[in-house]
Every structure is written in structure tokens, then in C-alpha cells.
Amino acid sequence: MLTIRNTKIYKNNQITIPSKIRKELNITEKSSVNWILNDDKTITLKIENKTKSVKDLVGLGSSEELTNAVDLKRRLYL
Image (cartoon, rainbow, N blue to C red; front, side, top):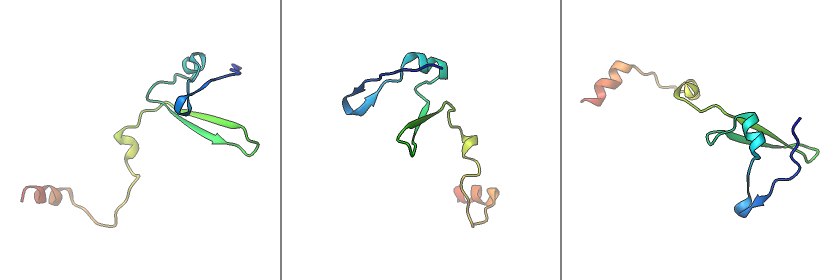
């Protein structure tokens, strides 16, 4: 287990994730850090390295309106 005892908080409340941890967890500019405050006042961090794609959005929304791709395309050109 890698333990870092101190990380400085910079201006505007920014922090730097230590390089050993960034390398071990493959954290990049596109990564997302989720902060979870536990009941015992400790913090759990979860790192998401996955870049979102269109495939991730499929099925997130829904509509009551029935659609027909051919009719929609025709309406574009009328």
C-alpha cells in the first residue's frame, strides 16, 4: 500500500495528485475524481479513467413520441 502523508492545498483550493499515485492509477487529464465523504469524516476517492463516448449515451434518454427515421429525414429537406 502506498501512503502519502501530505499534499499541499494551493490557491483556489486546488491540489496536486502525487505522481506515484497518478502513475499507479493511470490518472490523466481526462480522468475524473469522485470525492465521497464518509460518515466517519474520512474521504474515499474513486477515479474514472474512461473517456465518455457516444456509446455511453445510448439509452440514457427516452421519449414518448414515436419517431420514424425516414419521416424525420424527409422533414429536414422540406
